[in-house]
Image (cartoon, rainbow, N blue to C red; front, side, top):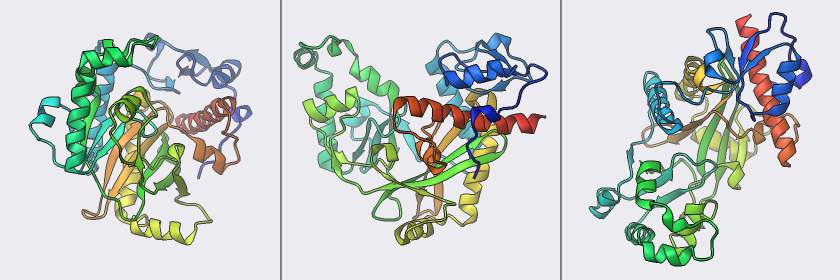
Length: 350
């Protein structure tokens, strides 16, 4: 496991190595690179073939918006994983008409793929949940009700086209029952230097919840009640964290790792795919990426859930005694983790 370095450990650049770092991202890292003689750029037109992308480029010139670029990138990355035999769980775009026509089979997950930390992810487990979702969507699309809900709000919620919002942001994904009483996922943190910095299994007990962590979640859960079982295993949402190559696993964690076949060739393939895909898309992603996976014991298969080019690194930071409690500490820690990944890439390119 790669130790998290201090900013002072980044070597001085004698030849003015070009690095791409978007403004506002890890300001302390930005200043450190600038002071250490690196040519820090934040416009794609200034990059060349030798530029190290510390943060990924936001969109290419052939795309009209960041949303279009992200959609294309998702497709490219999924194709790259498929070459390694790893796919996403079966996923389709959400359609209210398809919902009315009962095109979806329970159980399924309704998820906003643009939200992190488990926000706006709803498990539709029963026919009762399904009917409640239809009722909820119908109410959201009713302008009169939204007028009433937003009457005391500075932000007029009723002006949002919820049907368009749901269809453009939400996906319906097959539900995978993980191999224990817990909801589990695995986060693999990589650098494009063909390195896994950190891998952990995240787990928590499912519970009946009202999602109040986002604007739409509040609308769904409070104004039009839609209570579902939690599917979130992220530690930011209260789950536990098991470092896969850690030294002090509890008996319960050892059993969880065994049930997920962590020592198998299948999981080794997950790690190799993570490294290869990140290296292939290093300019688009940047020097740090978190890949989330879920294990299906029935098919003995790992599936890619999502990737993050700005992953939360709290568990990794705490593993090395780097504070991650206050906002200031998180900014410093995330900068140091990105500096660690940058240093790996720098060593590889020399």
